[in-house]
Image (cartoon, helix red, strand yellow):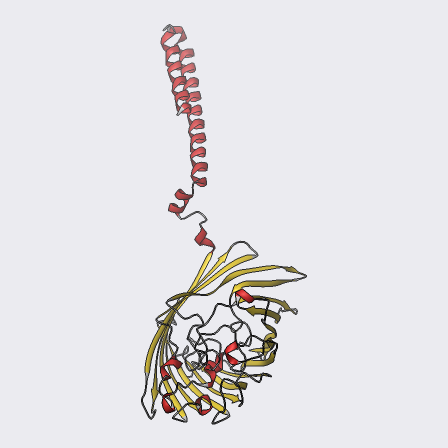
Length: 446
């Protein structure tokens, strides 16, 4: 305002001078010239003052977050956040059981927030909302021989069997994973590490063709090897305990000209006793092409002495084991996979497991995004474990086939799935020697 006043003052001064000057006819020409020059000077000063004022206003608004947010041109905290989500609804029904059949419908919503704090530091917060905390295996309660509560072998240690979508953190709304990720330059590559609330099952022993229970196989045997005592579980079938929060440290580095070899290691335990009786994992993974088609090979090892005290395990005992996973797209439409894992424990009832299968993409020409999956799983059981006793059969066999329809431009997937489990749980507590489960799954990613 003071600058506008100065320009006005100059105008009044000019007018005063003009008024005070005598109107002499001989001086009219000179007077007019003075008037023109003064008018030009006033206009120039006014333009300069307006430009300065406009510049100051612009600079102020650029510093004002509220104004910039309203214009959509400012950097806000949400600009650093990437959100991925998915909703899954699962209906499963048993078929042909002697005593009775059961149907259970479950659903969950996952929201994954990744926050880019800076170029080398990220935060991750992965939330899950479940309809309830009941795994499908609990629907078998009271259906076994003599009113006992049977389980399939894949669910012995983690309560996740024929429904792999069961969350390891059951409840209405829970933190599935959360923590810090950081990387720093290591030669011509980067060393990555992360720390927080997460477990090993999504980081070791994965397969690109079986690791997504929302779109691929339902039986957890194809996803997470039953012979591995994964620390993050939905619960324990024997002790009846619910899943507990697991704290993890995980790091990895990529090697090779194409950075296609990854070496990773992790340490996992319950937060209150993190440095006692922890789980340790190490893995070497290779990703490349054979005959122009993507192939993955992973080899992992683990050490563990964290089996729960309910199992009567000597705290000084250490379990060890490992596994291999492999998958390869043989053609543009056919993929093959194989997995095997084993452990040296006398207490883990699943001493060895494996699976093989195939995926078929776009078999129907008019539906190029549909997928068919066929898998066969094998679990070898051992007798004499303190908590189980004697199994009627020493194996459990799983056969699963699914057809997944891609709908609405791949924004929704509808899957029809059939599982046939022979000698479920090694026959322990089961009145039937065959379990058939039919599944309808709806999946919407966003």
